[in-house]
Length: 160
Image (cartoon, rainbow, N blue to C red; front, side, top):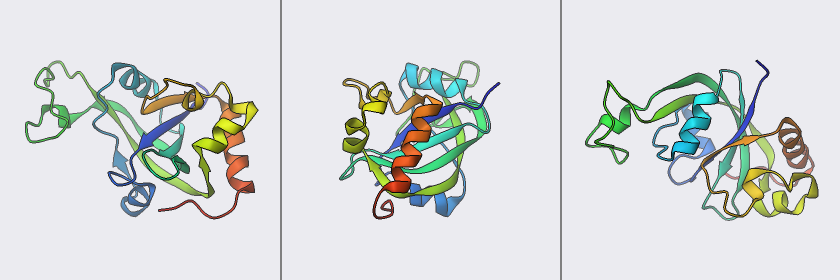
C-alpha cells in the first residue's frame, strides 16, 4: 500500500513538537472522536504526519512526524485516573485506539492556518474547511508537498 499522509493537531502547551523531539517517540492517546479514531486505524507505519499546533498564536504546521506503530488499544481509556478514561472501554472491547509517532524534522518555518487558507491550491484541504475540527485528518500527497514548499520558502523557524 502507498504511503499516506495525515495532519494531527496538538495544543503546544499539552504536547508540543519540541516535546516529541525531546522524547523521540510518543503514543498519540486521548482521541475521543470516532471519525478521528477510525482515521488512526487506517494509519500504517511509515505514513507521514503534518504536526499542527492548535490553540497557539498563530496556529499552524510546525513539523513532520512519522507513524512508527500502527493502531492499538488506547490504554488511557481503561485507567480511571486518566483524563481520557472511558468506563465503556474494556480490555475485551477497547473503544479507542492510538498510534505511535516519532519526529522526522521541524519545518524551516511555521505554516500558519492563515497561510494555508490563503493558498488556493489548498482550498480542498480538510484543515482549511469550515467545520473541520478533527484532531486527525487525511492529507492528499500534493497538499503535503505544497505545505513543505510553503515552509521552505517561509521566514523564521517554527516556534517551540
